[in-house]
Length: 98
Image (cartoon, rainbow, N blue to C red; front, side):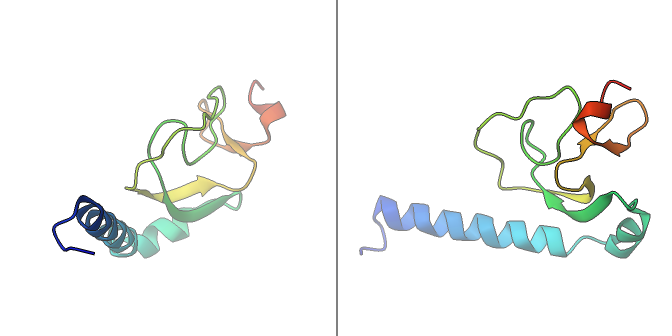
């Protein structure tokens, strides 16, 4: 494969983005303090901040879209729980309107 071909250049860009993404998630200062602040129903991690991607939120429908390669580090609702806006708690979907 020639080093100036469009496929080679695109592949190099993808590799750079993936490496930077992994570095940003792992290299955030204060990571331990954030981990300690997570509630029992939350998990610490790095997820896409793109709307429709990442954490479930009450009243928002997830759509099958392409998610950003960047990530937001923090405490996120576990599994099938949803973030309720009024009190910022993670709840089952049937408690979203309560």
